[in-house]
Image (cartoon, rainbow, N blue to C red):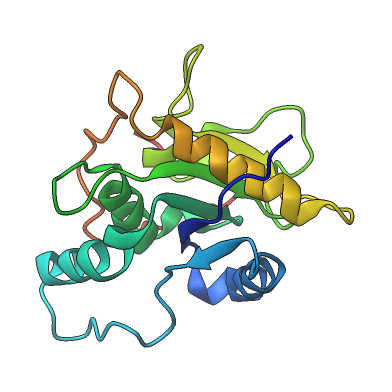
Length: 190
């Protein structure tokens, strides 16, 4: 079987809770992907309007990526930046083509290694794209074992192949205006 190509990947995650997993993911995949992620302190969001932040994320980071990987911890569903990053990844414009999308449940997530996942415990915009016989996005568990990079590289390639499929992915929700609050065990409600 031929080796899958090395894709440009934007990694979306909750920086406060899941930075260690992001670092581990980037290190594990350093020879398999080109990391296009936003790092801590890359964007000064204190004095910027929301639309400026979204534009910077879309144009300077996601715009050059071909796949977005969402690392899903127990509170990722609450984060406005994760919501904005998924939305920017789903947009398809001439300047910023749509990215493929996949989620990886981290070991700290309540549904890790379960037969199924609770949609309310993952980011809503990602959940919207997981339904049907041929979903736009897929969810996987953080893998173990020595073949992790090859397995993840294949997941990323499959997401890349799905990025232009019809119908277009679902991006009809209103963007989060702020981080959500709530019990991490029960998740979001419509």
